[in-house]
Length: 443
Image 1 (cartoon, helix red, strand yellow):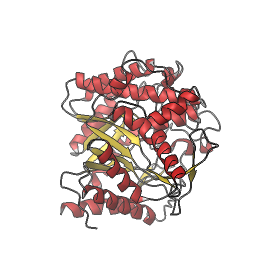
Image 2: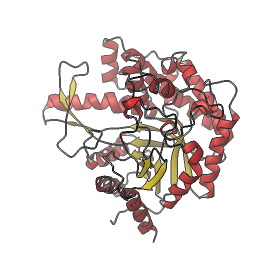
Image 3: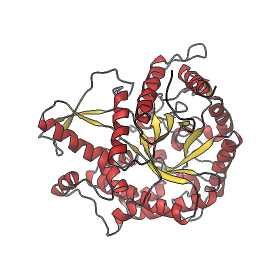
């Protein structure tokens, strides 16, 4: 496959702490909201928890060797806040910090670039007991946690991501309760979203204050919205959907304001977030790059029965095991739009991948659908690059099968198969294809 990626383009794989680490009660780690949530019966499929997950905490050396064998340049991982500050603040847990120091040292040994995410949803439960992200104080605690890590790890990590998908943390955690902490309160969800973005701004300021030479950004899950029909009502509905799901998080960070159309709807229903004087200025502290998690698109039609005046329509293409339509054109459209609307900000695809029904047969997983998915999305990214989109790197989600949040261990996104009873790792055909693709680029 001839693709136009420049030599300096960064290829990687991505994971998240709670999804892979296990060792939930070892070396002084505190309880996270996902520990509490997953141990509450009925919250996860088969009542699965992340107690063991992929046992990465004990197998990180083996896993990093495996990453190296794929021929990638970089590894995106997340740091578990409760490992560093078991109560969210106070005295740091040095054993937790030492684990990440060992991971980073191992990455450097294998000449892999670390991309560290500060928050991938595992809030210390002690902070949730004080209101979690609906409490403004959590943003300050996050800033202190970030500043501590920048000072401890900033010399060996030069690529930082503040948050992974604040839309999900706010709306799934506090809005519909599908994720930890399992709260169903729209007003709390909107306020939590605001505090997540505010904490991001505080963390970026802390990074600048630490005087480090690397780069810092945020990762947003973005899904382009397409009108179901070429009628004005559907076009306007798609624009509202975009303002609600995409621009509500993009605009405060990149232009320092919330989309007016959504603010008006929230205000009408008494849901607008409580904001203090400098919040938007802090939230829009300049970042070095924007991370994008792209999985699918949304097709939108007008619906006057909905608060926001729209509803979702299913697409006509093949879907993944998550029920998400496979639509590579959406990635291209998204990249072009971000370039045009947000002043050419440098971009990384920090997650892209697919969940299918993988079967291990004679130590092999033939996941042709995932290979096709990746090829199609790489092609879409290449097309965007050819039109001068400042795309700097691409991280496949995920390195390995893992705890897929409320879906437990049934949904597999990895390019590496995990046999959970034995914790054996097997390269799926998609991993071998990715390795061969990267090798062919360098030969």
